[in-house]
Image (spheres, rainbow, N blue to C red):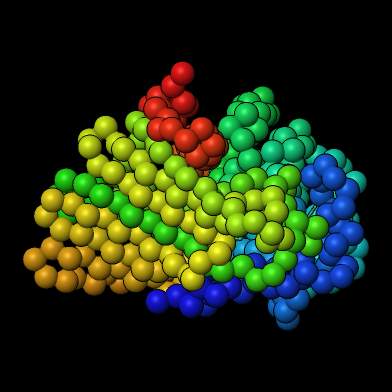
Length: 407
Ligand code: NAD
């Protein structure tokens, strides 16, 4: 079970950063940062409780790929940056932040040279910084598209956090920019590098539950008091519709990588309680039902206002697969019920963070195919758009095989 009272609970033992970021966002210093209207990158305070390394980590190999981290928030500082030390050939080469004090403290802790510490205003100079091969975009979601384009303009490869962007049109722009620059684009879908999820994909491909009939996913937690001026996650301009882009996207992904099908139709519902500042701009719940060409059905739910859950279940003709928690930072559990119960412990979920870094560096250095490319992020945004369209129009939306909506 997951306690689910906070996002930290949702994400598991290692998931403190976003709960911390909520705390940060609620601090008085944060309010002015969101007031500008149009989404743009603006420095934020150091996430409360962020732990910086006592000794700067060093690259392990001479061909290690240098990353510039854009956005020093909770996820960057508490999850990803510490995990570079576990990667075989990825290191933090530069940092980009709008907060000079944070830039100094993080730069000192990670041994980033003073001339490899950029502000949002000086970012373009990174084009001539040969220490930087790739840019890791870990900004609020509305900023992913613009900063990915800027990174490609600077001639760098891009690892972009999920959701790839807030619309399929933005995703298409990002993919086009990647092609123009002839540089790689990967979406940081970490579950593709997490041992339980990888084994679940293999089990489903082997027919471990027979023919898949029903997939159920839920990713939820109850968000504490906040408002769009305090917290980008409840601000529509920065976060889109809310929990679906943030948490529900893990269930959406699982439904796709476990069935290995695209839905042919989607019907969905959203809910927004009245007079709740948390949901003045975003949805509290989003649920959808998908029908696949095989006849299988997926039921997806995600919420920022219900007791925590993070599970994925697949029911087939001969058995069922259960993952609970399914997509946390840590603590995954997975079992198969098929003529008896069989538990799987394929490895430490913690490897997913460095795993995706090494996967991207393999693509950059050796030209290997990217498991989670921009096209996958685009596909997912098309499905998110279909979910919102169905809910808004109160009808079932029919889809083309690429996820675009049929007229
Ligand atoms: P956060 O609020 O903790 O940090 C966001 C950071 O972005 C800020 O600290 C600041 O440095 C920067 N920023 C620049 N302009 C900003 C603005 N206008 N408003 C707010 N911050 C601004 O958020 P986070 O949890 O670190 O999330 C950042 C990104 O990482 C999001 O896209 C999120 O979806 C993604 N994320 C991914 C995972 C995962 O498991 N893959 C987990 C958490 C977050």
